[in-house]
Image (cartoon, rainbow, N blue to C red; front, side):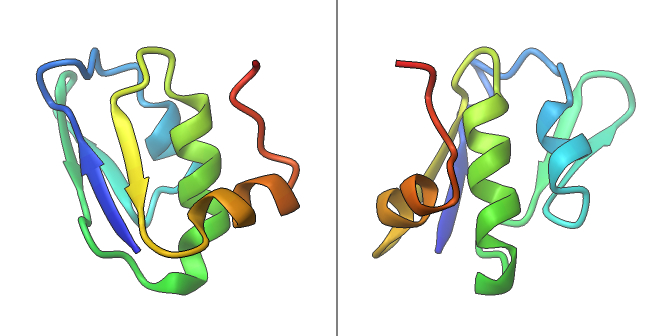
Length: 78
């Protein structure tokens, strides 16, 4: 699994850090730090964080990401 965050789009709402604190962390009030290749065991938390981002700055890449999101009941609201 690969995580990419568009740091130009990120507004520092920190929903990702709340949902997957071992993958995403706020440094100060506005700078986001993240693990670009988290352990696969964190997939569900990462997909929830991706779905919760209000500005859609997080992208999760890797085989099965969409299937895992659907199977976990994660929705993009659409």
